[in-house]
Length: 299
Image (cartoon, rainbow, N blue to C red; front, side):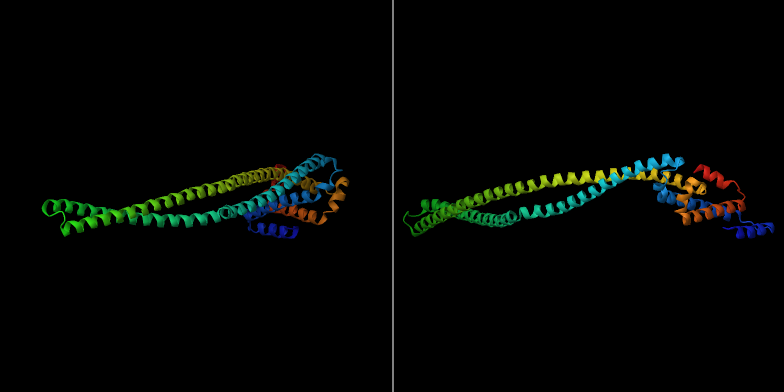
């Protein structure tokens, strides 16, 4: 607000038109803008105030804080680079875990299928052997009965004896086949155990490397979080010092020790002076003529 609108509002108030809350809200908004402008001015001008005695504390504290902030910024950049590299390495490791045992896994799958086929064949032979044994026991019982009833040389007895011999031979063949399958199955199972051990060894090596990598990722993240927290704290301190410098320059911009610095930021200072005037006028219209001074002192 400038003087002309202010005068018009004063006239309007004389006729009973008074929007005090509206002017108070405008003043509060402008105060916020002025505080931001003070910080911006201080941020722009702080390196130029080394020779101003009244700002010596702010200047040298900012020198110290800025140096620390830059150091933390470099550390954060380094931690970010490390984190990126660790994440890339993690991706590579995930691929290596699979690739490292791919050949063994394929071999194991083939052997496992072979083992299942052999076991299935063994179960079939065992089932056949049970059938043969049952048939053998039946014929043996038949011979015992026939031997007590018929001539030992009868065709029935002879046929049963021949069938019994044939079943014994067949049973022996089945048993030999089963034993051979058991040897093959044991060999395949032994090879599977060996492959499992080799797969586990390879994956264990990858896991150890992955564990180290995850620990590195965790450390990098902790470093980043710590640095960001410190940088945020430093930024808050620096903002307060920037605001003090900006506020001081605005308040004494015509003093000789400050005039040169003020001339370098004349455009911003003109805007800040206009804001200060507008705040004062809005506060008067809101019925709070001392509000600007009070707010400035609190800041």
